Amino acid sequence: MKRLFVVGVALVLLGPPLFAQLHACSLCTGMAQRDTLGMEYERAQLVLFGQISNPRFNTQPGAAPGSGSTDFRVEKVLKDTTGRGPWKDIVLPRYLPVLDAKNPPRMLFFCDVIKDRLDPYHGRTASPALLEYLGATLPQRTKPRAQALVAYAKYLDHPDAAVADDAFHEFAKSKDEDVGQASKLLDRALVRRLVQSAKNDPDRLSLFAFLLGGCGDQQDAKSLRALLEPPNPNLARAIDGVLAGYIQLQPKDGWNLAYKHLADRKQQFAVRFAVVRTLRFYHGWQPKDAQAQVLHGLSLIVPDGEFADLAIEDLRQWRNWDLTTSILSQYGKASHAAPITKRSIIRYALTCPLPEARAFVERVRRSDPETVNDLEEYLQFERKR
Image (cartoon, rainbow, N blue to C red; front, side, top):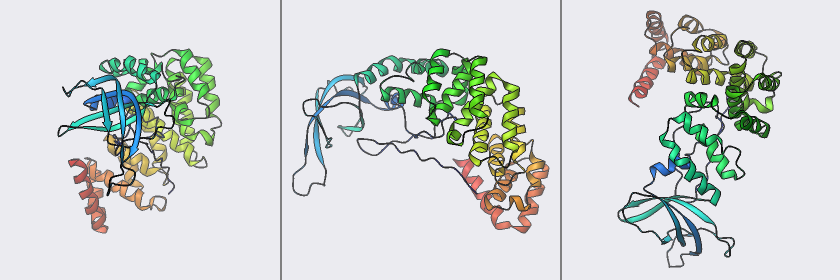
């Protein structure tokens, strides 16, 4: 069974990378799973900005290859909870290359103090624009999340790529509910520009198109519809957000278009999977208001062996048992014989509290006790996490 996987790779200058949990916005599936600057700021004990210079390798006998040190002149202390300042000139325990000695780079370092020693565990090149961005947005983090996202949105098309990228990741790290609320508060002209500039960047187009659905008008609805019919496989990663935005502006036609693609087994996998992601987004954003539409969409793919496990596992995680009869009836069919699909049905039945699910489990236990026992152990582990 074909599956799409996206691997995010983050480059960190100092020490091992610090990966966060998966981002919360389900429209941003293609983005690296790294923390934003604001999240790094909140975690660090000490945040310093300044200029590095004079890198040198450690030439002592027995020194590890590539080890060395670099001078760091602190120009601004953004945060200090250590009580150990002032911080001025620091020797970093890393060799950091300086390509132009006459114009050495300025960097931002996130540090802790461990056993009375400074640990600059994460660092990155930082422009004055990035510093201004942090000064303007860090105070927003104490506000309701949707309001904070409105502030971050102003930087989504910033000419400094690092600023625009971090602002985008603030949306990627936000809950679907917060992104949905923010979409209705944004400047329409700004979001239109963002959509136009992202036509060849499906990861950003997905988010920006959805945001346009929240603040746009019928002219924007036509623009989004043109991106959906016929669907462009090259922009498959963006279809979930484009469709979610179009549904905001044209609910009836948008949902019907979603159902059409889900029911069409000749449609490309990437397109149908994008529609599944749209259903997941609406469940995360409007779990009650969109419940009927999401449930109907999933009901269309439960009988499809290629997609059934996606729908079944979503429903299990959401603890929605409305499609129990349909799900259990797929077990034993040739179309649903793939191990991943059979196990998803059993796992669903083990979690479902309905009598028909318990009876189903006992029947399967008699014919395949090993699989049932394995999945019971898995669910026990899942509950303990």
